[in-house]
Image (cartoon, rainbow over all chains, first blue to last red; front, side, top):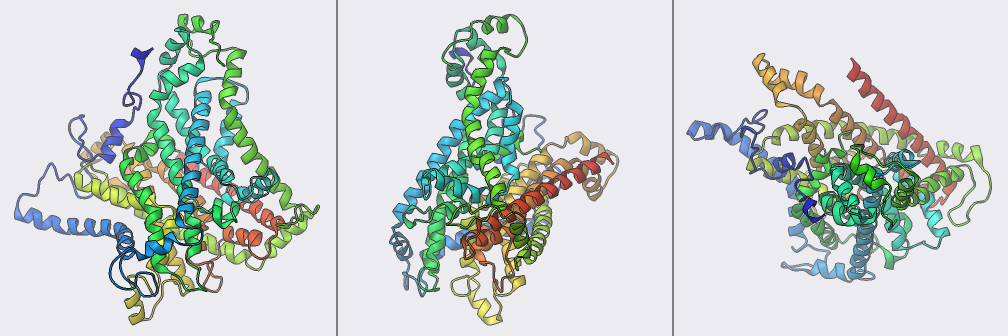
Length: 322
Length: 307
């Protein structure tokens, strides 16, 4: 059994093109020629060595750099101004972390909100991974009555507006004693993650050759052991993608907590920071809001930069090819 | 579940057939699919039925179900004083956002599709905003557009304009926020589509002497249609259901000019009116409209494919 265990790279047929997208330095082996067409041409084939070449390409460099800056500027500006002085905030003169102090002492304290958000996000990730791992295995490897109906119903979640479900869910969760509950929010968020994660896990399992688990079955493994010992290592890239998307969605979700949570001690971070703006009789503490945005955005941006390859693979795997 | 499948295993090994028939297998399959089924049943199917019932019932937020109120809820929903204004505003916002995002993301994808180090950097910078949540991005722009704390505060004072003060200003400011947040995401979808177009087709077009613009119009665009269809459907659906950006950035103002249909549902249900029955009716209307619009879009794209 152990000899047939595949490495994660072998099991992802599209890793090559994914690398080409996320790791620009990587060159495809096929002829060594990437996509040298379209705007700008292929700078590798015609390096602008001459003075005229550099002069011709300067507008291109300046233009694209300005475009990139347009996308990065709001983020950089917020990070800088959250520690710079501004009248009407806790950071009136000089640079410092006064705004973060305001944020830390807001109502129940930022640690409570950070804990709530972390709890909801991790529980959502855990539930999404467990449900989509088992479900993806069932859809990819078994035949059972109602299979297609169940799969289509899972995908149908995408078609239904958020609010259309959240209003009855508010009533239902109240009825079963999960009103104002972070667990309730995590359950709802997991449900909204299911269409993407189930699709992703199903195609991840289907990309693994069947001979692998059949061989393990012959060796006398139960389907449960086959899943854990043979298949989980093979679908690990899919699991990372699903987990990343579930985390980003849960950490950033605004509407589900807005409708399902009314107790200020149970609020998640986005909700708390949104409420913080109107704290003092219509006077908005912009500094504390900036600090809040930084706290909200930083984990997402770091996670995105670290796992960028997996983020992109989620799309490359064909999940969004219509 | 813990039992092995002794009857099936030898059969599977001796024949090249790739499926395991048998009732035992079906039961195991159902056990693995059970968590999914529970989630779909209790958190999707049941709420969907409940919202149908709510839309036909007198159902105050705190009072619970007060009995049948069938056509009245729908009449109240349609005759709400903001109903047609919000429908019109949502449609306008959707068309503008979809057109701008589609053109821009395709442009960005064409700009960065080659694999060079510089273009990889560009790609990453376009993609970073899409890691942010919509709520965080809206809060960020709320400060950025502010006449007190924003970087344009001095300019706004000197030239006497505001971003969110006029209906048109609020709409375009929100569209800019959405484009900033989503352009990278849709660029990624476009890149996936562009990668699916084989190199030989371009080679053939080049040999035939097609200009760059001709190649783009007669090769890239038609072959990109599945991706374009997907992007349009995603973008239209997302924009029709816009909520956070307006809830945080404009709060429906100025003068209630930027109320979207989902915001209307939220305020009917939880702010003031507290009427879940009418909110349910509005939700059902939105659900039906969304299904009709998406089916129409998919049909339109399929019909074009047949031409």
